[in-house]
Length: 336
Image 1 (spheres, rainbow, N blue to C red):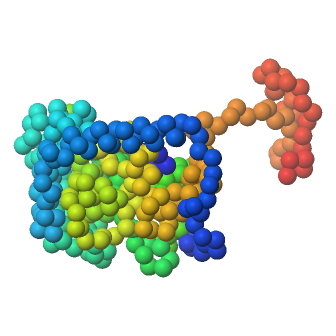
Image 2: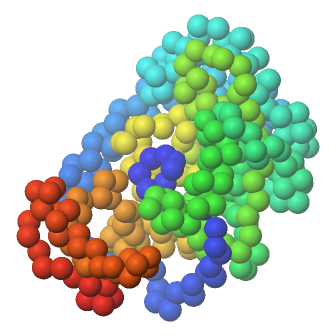
Image 3: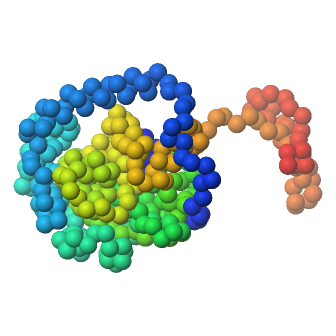
């Protein structure tokens, strides 16, 4: 989600950086980035003042239940002054009680019990939650990634087909290679990982994409898997430090490029070394995703030997029939 983040598995050791992180290195910024940064600052300055007087007071997270956190999320997105009101407000206020009941029914009882016991930082208890990873429906999941030094990271995501998401994407190194994100960046340096199912959306609902975004946001807050600044905005200050988060952008902002770029900039000042390394690798172009559409390949005309009959097959006539330019035959020896 978002820019080089939203959106996995041979393990590799975490490389030991011989050079310091280049936080202070200078490199050319393009004009678009400068204009965008100014626009972001203007938007934040304009909204912070108007929202400060209407945002509900912070909750005591150490005593809060999952329902308490959910009510705060729904209250915030239902406020007309919230930047999320235009997208979520009308739907949330249409039937607040019904939406709350729906979301509560999605959260697995085992997950709710763990949250109420305030042990979400216990990787052993979180891993024991398990869940059906073969489920081919809509779900919110937690991916716990362990580095060679024993450090653990949380990533919370959503999927319309959980099985496909886990086995065909997260655990497919080619997919990770072609889809640059902070999550994949850490997974490729890990030695162990565990998936846990947090919630499932089994009922047919209106605007299920919005429901999944709210459900994922709620789960991110329950497990404190968001940047510190974002957690403080939604839960209040004074939160105990939890497991480091691989989530960068708020799930409510899925599809919002401006919000994603703003969230990405938070990595620059992160207290986590790997987060800052990822930030500078992206900014300096050291990480590049594979193009979504591969260029049209040039016609290759070859002469090869067919095993059966040991007869040479000339593909030149095939190229000519397709209207491709004449090229001399190339044998396998020429291209290796």
